[in-house]
Amino acid sequence: MKPIYPLPVRNEFVFNSSPRDFTVEEIPLYEFTGEGEHLVLKVRKKELTTWEMLDILSQYVGIKRRDMGYAGLKDKHAMTIQWVSLPAKFEEKLAAFTHEKIKILESVRHNNKIRVGHLKGNRFDIRLKKVLGIQKDKLDSVLKWIKANGVPNYFGNQRFGTDGTNWMDGKKLLSGELKIRDKKTREFLMGSYQSYLFNLWLAKRMELNLLLEKFSEEEAEHVLKLPSGALKGVKAQPNFFKLLEGDLMMHYPHGRLFEAEELEKEAERFETKDTAPTGLLPGSKTKRATGVARFFEEQFDEEIKIFGARRYAWVQVTEIKKNYVEEKAHYELSFVLPKGSYATNVLDVLRGTNQI
Image (cartoon, rainbow, N blue to C red; front, side, top):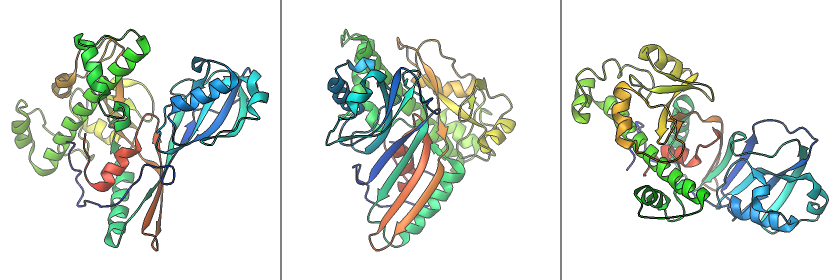
């Protein structure tokens, strides 16, 4: 169970993850050159995973899926607009491509294949239904909070597969209970377990944040069994997400990793959105937090035989737009998140609660 947010609201609304009510559009990391040996396609799809869409396109032109490039995996249940690449020699053949669930919106040449992560972010358009009376005002208030504070960067449920058990298979791989030969499949499942551990860590840090909203530093130390004085000065930080001695920070929205030393100064930089704290995706060749921050992190740090990483624990929501259609009781919402972040985190905060 993830904690309730420090907002005087619990909103009820209906959200359907469907092409009619949920659109995701990739924002490319850079402009495409207009020349080169690769053809970049802007593709709109619905009711298909990214893998399924790539299979359909690759089979149509007669190449293997691995010969195509993509920047990110997109939700099957949304209308998604994303960029993919393939050899430019198929440009003429693709001019005749038609499919009921896929439409090529644009094409442009480029001098290299699109790689995973070649994204600035994603734009989300969401329609919430049955937003009646005072609920609209409550949503306006929470959106104001989100704009000022941001949201926690949990991995979304889609990271864990249709039945939510991918992480369990990843754990079984690590213990030797499960054997899978394919390297990419092994890494994918272990990556799901990394994501699960990250979410557990983030939920624990959210628990700390909520304790400090309601109780003193000494009381929070007692509840969490921390050494006396471990949280000294933390409660006074201006942000909802409290930084701890030894936290590893990164410049935001991208930049180098560094350790938080002067917490008061670092909390001010975090408030101005210049930096953000990071959490651990356990694995090799990855820097760990120290001090008080390590106390929380080590509870969810396991030996995983793939590269680890640091991930922003908290992200900002930008370009927020809203429109209320009173006669239909629809609340239309648009916003941008950095790559790798999930719209479900925004929806969870709007509801006032979320679950792992």
